[in-house]
Structures are given as structure tokens and as C-alpha cells.
Length: 495
Image (cartoon, rainbow, N blue to C red; front, side):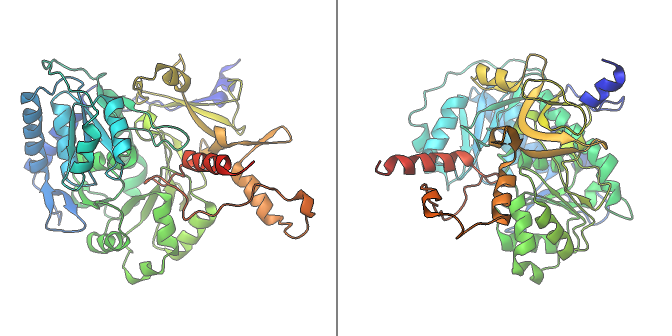
């Protein structure tokens, strides 16, 4: 195979300036926050790391983040919390989240976030699976946490030791949309490199396009309403910490608080998930608020529909760019990011981010050329160490050459933009050819034959109406719940 052919099969994005760090995540973030609070602030920036959207008087400065995270580290170390011990946070979005997360890493440990909406059973499962030594929560969740830890074993203290860039720093749990949640082990090097990649992409391809007078992080506000225990929301929290912007924290998504925060703090850029874009597009209450400061809307976690995007851009003519990216917990956040080369960047997930390699493979593992759909595989310095306690599942996800098999089905066009069509597991065979589930549904809707089918040809399964489609906080449909409910309904019916 010639060199020219290889380029079409495997896309690599490397450069001499590509970020590739071997430092500790907490070291970079802690040092960055200490530099911000000793540097004179310019313009009208308020000098705070985070401000509560619900109560603007509740706020924390970069200096307080720096001081308090070191106090947390000292507190944990004095009580036997040591190298690679796991600390689990059961908290809604709040400014204490960054303090406890950095404190745990400064003490040499690992941070694992859990949803404050989790049930007692779900918390117990994550506590046991992660072998966590410390749980941090608030008054609203303390009783649930105490019940969950009853069946967890007592922990042994161990001496603190030196730690390394390849040590595990984070233990987020995968979204579990198609199966049980798994603990994803991310190292200091994984996440630090991811922050560098994201920041570099923003500087090179995004920020300079959003303001006539240039972009100054110290003058900007960014809404933080995505859940911090999810890798997308967690990454945005750290993006603010790295760059000196002020994060406006929503403890949960509240439509009124969300709209008031945009009107009050005037962010130029908002990071959303599809359900929030749907709300902005469809809900009449948005007309009561001034949202004209927003120039760029970035969506992630789940795919956007073209019709929704078209309607959104027609409604908000001041929005210069609407784009989506792509990532996974297993790659520390994002592997594809939009270049903002047009107002409508939503037809694809953008270009391969710096330091990554990419290839599209067939069902047999053969690399496919440009334009042919197959499974997306990525490789780079942010790919997870593995799934906690699951070597077999790790081997299925990451092969012996280091390629992460994403399970997503798509193709790369001749401009280097990646298009995701569906999950590999959700594809349907039609006359021996693969087709998307959504395509089959749309075809049936457009060619409706209701009333034209003989009675004996009706399906006997029937239609089940549910109050709502189960979705994760990031907007993904949790298909396993639908499958489990369907199996339960079928088993309860008389044969």
C-alpha cells in the first residue's frame, strides 16, 4: 500500500505545537488559579472563579479555591487518605466541587463523581465498585449516602507515597446508555493533555472569531449548568479554572435561572446538550429575555437533528455559530471539535483534535477509505487506562495497538470532517445492508399505510405509551431502561 492510500485510511493530526503534557492535573490547575488571583484583573471582570446563578451573593474567588483545596488535601492526608485512594463526590453543581476535587488530587488520590439524583442502590454500587475511601456530600443527600455505605467494607489506612503522571486521577462512570455503568480510569496525563488540547483548539479556531476587540478570558463569563460528575460538565468547570473566566454555576438546569443568567452575565459562548437547545428553540418563555450576547452555541453529549438546528438559527439570528463536537468519557472528554468555518457547523462533529489519530474500520476490522461508513476508532494520549476491575471489557474497547473502538458508526468526508450516523449496536439490517434506526422510523412515517393493511397483518405487540423517554442529564436516551421495561412487560403478559 502506498503512502497516499494510507492517508485516506488513517487520519492523523499531529504538529510540533501539539500539546502533550506529563504534569499532574491538580498541579497545573492549582498553579494556574494561584497565578490568576495575584495578577491584576482588567476591564469589568469581577475576579471570581464561580458565582451562583441562583444567588449571586454566593461566590468563590480563585484565591479561595487555591487556599481551600490545600486545606482539604491536608485534612484528608491527616486522616489516612493516600496514594490512589478514591474520593466520591455526591453533590449537585456548586463551587465546592472544584475545591474538593483539587483537594483529593493534591492528597494523591482519585476523584469519582456521582449524581446527586442517584438512588441509594446506585450509590452503593458505585461505592463498592470504585472501592472509595471517602464520600463528600451535602445535607440534602447525607441520609441517602449513610444508607448506601452501610454495606461497604471498612477501609485500612496506608502511608502516603509519591505519585506519577500515569497514576489514576479521575474515576468518572460511563453514562450507561446501552449497559451498566463502568468506572473509567483517567490518569493525570490523560486529563491534563485533554485540557491543553481543548484550550489550544479554542484559541486557534474559536475565540478570535467571537469578538471584534479580541477575547480576554478575564472579562468573560461562562455558564456552568451541565452536571459536574459528567465528563462534559467537569471539563467545562476545569476550562474556567484554567483560563481565569468566571463560571456562573447552576446547581441544576432551571429554565428561568438559566435565561436570567444569560441576560445578567451576558456570556458570548454557551455549552449545551440537545434538550437545552430544544428548550431554547421551542419554548415561548425565551422571548421574555435578552439573549443577544450569545454568539456561539456548542452542543455535545448527544447528536443534534438538522431540523432543530435550522429552526434555532432562524429564531436567533445573532448567533454566529452553532456547532457540535464529539467525545467520550473514555477519551477524557473530546476527540473531535468544530473549526467554525461556517455558521452551520452542526452537520458534522468537526475535525480530529490535535494529537489524535483516527481510522474508520469495517466489521472485519479493515480500514476504510474516505466516504465509506464504518466504526470510528481513535488513538491518542487522552485514551483511558481502562475500565476499573474489568480487564475483559477494557480489551474489547481498546485493542492491543491502543485504538479505542468507540462503537459509533460514521464516515469522514473529503474535507476531514467526521459524520456520526448511529451507534454500531443500534444499526438495523435491511436486505443485508446496514441502516440507521432513525432512517427506518422516518421512512415508515413518510410512507404511512395506516388503514391500508389487512387485519391479519397487524403486529400483535402493540404500542406502549410512557410518560417520558428516559434520558441521562447529558441528554442521551438510556436505551437499557427501555429494553428492561419492554422485557418486563412481555414477561408479565399471559402467553
